[in-house]
Amino acid sequence: MNSHPTARPRAMAAALRTHWASLAPREQSLVLAAGAVLGLALLWWLALAPALAQLKSSSARHAALDAELQQMQGLQGEALHLKAMPRPTSNETLPALWRSLPQQLGHATQMTTAGDRATITLKAVPAASLAQWLAQVRSTTRAVPTEARLVRSPAAAGAANAPALWDGTLTLALPAH
Image (cartoon, rainbow, N blue to C red; front, top):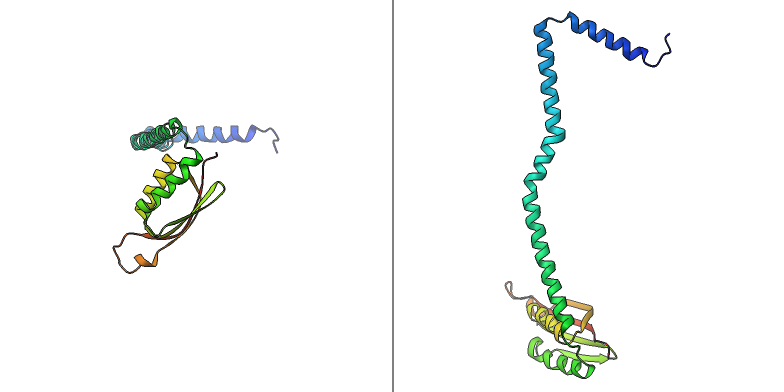
């Protein structure tokens, strides 16, 4: 038995050369054509098709990234606007909260304060009004929601197309003195 590591591949190569020489020229041409087709197919599947797929999807991904960039720039502008606004004092924050409650959330809404926290009790408050009030409170008083315990109000359960109404409590962190 031959122990040389390249002996077996050399023997196989010699056998293939012998077999190739025994083929007719037409058969050799067909084997070369089949090899070329196989090579082109591999080139397509491994190199060209993935690159073309990336190219086709790049415009959609570019548009999505542009939209995300626009949203982030809008948020940055809002943050810079809030940062530039003068900070309300604690003497201004609580009266502003008290005034905004009945105007936007209804007269059934109550507020209690303890230190730097305000707890708002909601009863049948429309979701759109609550969202608008939270945005206004954040921009005018810089109060930030820290906890929300909301459930859908049974008052809205009767009608199918009625807007969502919320009951529950909302805790706000008031700005530092």
